[in-house]
Length: 526
Image 1: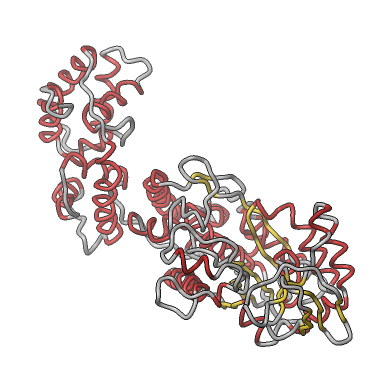
Image 2 (image 1 turned 90 degrees about the vertical axis):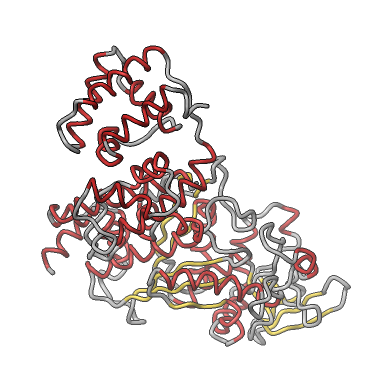
């Protein structure tokens, strides 16, 4: 363990770098609460998206890294801000008219448009928890509604009354002048309408722990800040929650970064040291726009898992969290194949190399062995030329290429074959565009057919690749990439593809000769 800890204390992998920052908080004194608390937040205003999952996964990676370098116990809380008023109706859910009638009511008071749970907030919380549970995350779930109503937040809310002027000073400095006139960090929940009110305070009574305000009709009300009758505006709520729970670490998206001094300042005004934080870059949709729960753009969690195993999503989340990434269908095959490349590299790496390998963090130091003897990208191309309707249509080719492979002995490959057929039919087939070869390309392809016709090198992918390479060179393709692009566009209907020698080895020499023959006869581009 000591050598692993030593390597972890020097690892440049970002989860270990973050874990060391958390550990530094307790260099001189262990936490009085007896553990280090990691937190992630979720705004259940819409269905959970992959960014939500990524926050939990990345935080878990840092938590596990921390457990290697420290013996202090840890907890991870997933906190749902479900007492927030519903400010707009998400575009991607049913019951639009009903939801409009419930605007500004807390999400846990809005009826569930799907008719499955006691509220819209409960529905979205369940969606999040279901997914986190399928990944085996260890976490504790806290609902803001329960947190406020159960009294767990009461002490901090009373302290917010005492420190009202200090909190307002922090908030007002960040607001435009017109907003300053009506702003309050407290949001009363109207006793009659149940709506979250954005109204100025007439009085904040620290001694009694109450607020006095006028509602939209000019009627005066006095409410206790405790017991879930009043909530905090979201920025003060962030800092106050850190103080109430004693949060040591929380990560959030770049869109929150300008608010960090506000969150920290409010936490510290309430007498608690602010946590460490990590700002990650945002996920983008196919058009480079930020993905959004309410718009439903980008990929959903379930959509990714329709076409690839969960571990590939974990790999995507690990990569460069401080770089904005396109999160669209075409990133899935690359993530699958790179994940398995890292799995294959892992056993031969030294301790430092293993700690820097994404699969260490995805699998908490104990990654499985890859049985993917055929890359996912190759399976997609095989599905294309074989016209496979299900995975059994691919296994005949796989067995010839890798005689020892079976669905039972290679469950990852078997699952990937099913995913590949599904992905090909849904995304590749509709967008394929075959073209006829140029005269130069036709001559080279005829030469390739002639050489394959006398080929006696078996299904050696590297030898076949060298031969294809030589054909392109002999026919004057410069750069040689143009030759391979021609093969992909003429034979596969795509502008890029696998190593062609590997494709021939998998698909078969005779089958490749026949495929080229069909392309030269104009059957594919017809």
